[in-house]
Image 1 (cartoon, rainbow, N blue to C red):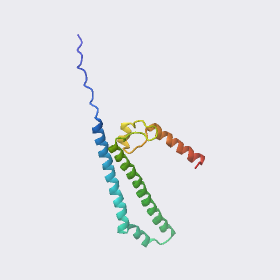
Image 2 (image 1 turned 135 degrees about the vertical axis):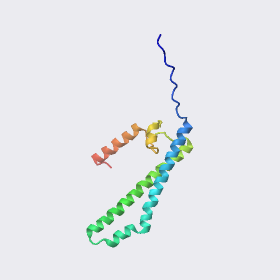
Image 3 (image 1 turned 90 degrees about the vertical axis):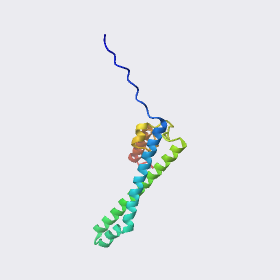
Image 4 (image 1 turned 180 degrees about the vertical axis):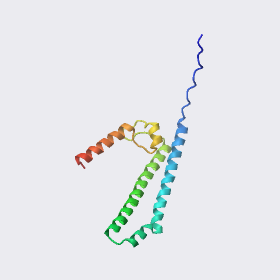
Length: 143
């Protein structure tokens, strides 16, 4: 007589509250990291690191480096600001109970996607559609 193995216990799925708490923690950690990076960038300006480049610029090539350095720093700050706004919006949605819903179709955004990109506002299908549309607009020169 063949032995049967005992039935496997189902893996306990995280409760909705546990999932929300974990996502909130990820969002808050990402927010804190971004704020630290922003403070570091701003402190560079306060300490005069960019000014030191300006003081040593001798020719057009040096000035190009100064311009490029400032442009990169400003782009980083702008990108960080946009990400902070997305994180704050996600935290607001978590508190309201609307977090994780696609802003285009209203479907639930896949939990794995939210773990990777916790401030995602579109499901994979809608995000891909938006990216294809953006690419078409760029290619066709529309807009």
